[in-house]
Every structure is written in C-alpha cells, then in structure tokens.
Image (cartoon, rainbow, N blue to C red; front, side, top):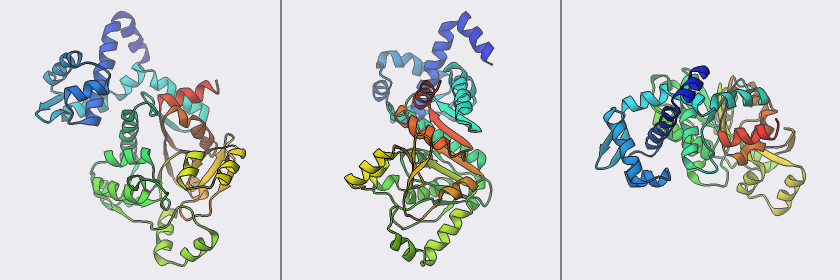
Length: 341
C-alpha cells in the first residue's frame, strides 16, 4: 500500500492532493451535518466559490445530499469514509506515525487521527468517531463497560449507534462527579451511551473527591456497593487522560494543594491518580470508583486523548502498561515523538 501511494504521489501529485482535500471535506460535513456551504467554508478556512465545485462533484458521486437544511453525507458516503481510513492513513503519514508511537509507548494498538485537537474541535469529534468504532469492534454480549467523564469521552458517546450486541451491555460510570459541566460528567455520558445504543446503564451518585470518613460512610450504602461490584467486573474500560493541574483545578484544589502537585512534578491524571513524567504516582485521591489495580486487571482498556498539550500526560500514563488501545491525534503524537526521538 505504501509503495503504491508513493508511486501515485510521484506520477500524479495533484491526484493525491485532491483525494486528501475531498476526504477532509466529506469528513467535516459528516461531523457537522447538516451544514450550509457558507458555514462549511468558514470551518475549512476556504471560500464558497472554491467549495462549490468540490461539493457538486461529491453530490454527483452520490456521496452527499444537499437540501434546504444543508449538506449531509449519504449512506454510501459513510461507507466510503470507513473504507478509506487505511488509504488516508498512508496519505497523511498517520500509519507510520502510529507505528512509531506504538513502539515508543509499548501499547498494542495505537490509532492516530489527522490534526490537533488543541486547534480544532473537528479533531476531537474525529477522535470520538474512532473511539465509537473501537467500542463497537470490542464489545461483547453481557459486557460491563466502565466510562470516565471528559470532553473526549463525550465525543465517543455522541457517535455511538444502536447494534444488537449492546442490548445486554451495561455502561457504568468509573468515578463519581467532578466539579465540571454536567454534560461532561460520567453519569451523563453513560446515560447518553445507553440511549444511543439501546444498552443499559447505572448511575453513581457520589462526589469524585471524598474525605476518608465519607468514603467509609458511603461503603455502607447498598447501591454504592452494587455499582462498585459492577465496576470490578468491567471487561472494557473507556477513559480519557487529563493534564494533572487542569484536573486538579476542576476538582477545586486549593492553591496550596496545586503548588504541592506542581512541586511533585505531576503531569497526568487518570482515575483519581496523579502521575509524574516517569509515570510514578505522586498523589492518590481518597475516592470511590475504579482503582488503578482494577484498570490493570481489565481485559480491554481504551484510552482517548488528543492535542499537543496532552503529550506529557499521554507519555506518563503509558508507563502504567495497562492500555490495549490508544486513540490520539497527530498533534499529540508528533509532540511525544519529537521529545523522545
């Protein structure tokens, strides 16, 4: 495949450029549909005149529907996007980038999407699309899927679709609520995932950050104990990787506590644990939910994090050697490899 792409690039360079442009156009419409030409031109930093010809070509090929509401990708267009992933990975150099990152982080499977989530919300949506696909590929009947909160996981939830296998699946929050937007809370996301797939879900009505006395008190509650048992049986874990200080601020850490984390060299956060650049735990919150030992025992652990700003966090968490799949973007991948090559 790589040799064929290189041959095309040399013999017909314009063909490769057109293919890249039309793929990104179709993908952008899929994420934003229905969308008008003017709005799409703004998103793609182009002009309506330039887009018109491309849109007409895609429409004539049966890949786009154009109505008074805007443009949408047809079923044929959806199939083409899925089938084109391998080729596009080669075109953008993402296949090679993923292989290098896989070797550097020692993670069985790494998927890299085009772009940088720090610079474009469309990239985060693409991370979500790939995350939803990986969940569909890995999930089995009667699975318990533990889910954390955050914007990357919210992107996955938004793109999950019904499938027969999901009918016996349970989505369960991996942790309690963090002091952030309601739509990014794990409780909200498991309910959305269940609604979008036809699965079942459980809620976990406890704060994310607790004092030792509160932990002991809540462990006497039957509903809390039941959810914790479900979490310990989770075969699949879907989670994000946070920047340490950003997550600490969301949890309303005091200035003194933030200074302590910074002095300890904390760069990453996941499951209530804070890690330094070597992947060593520098702080563990007293809380209920999945513990790191539970994560390491799970059969499938899917991590999603993108943006160059997450490079240190991704590299740090990889030291835990518990991930089966990392879904990230070009910005994060290049930042990690540029600092380690």
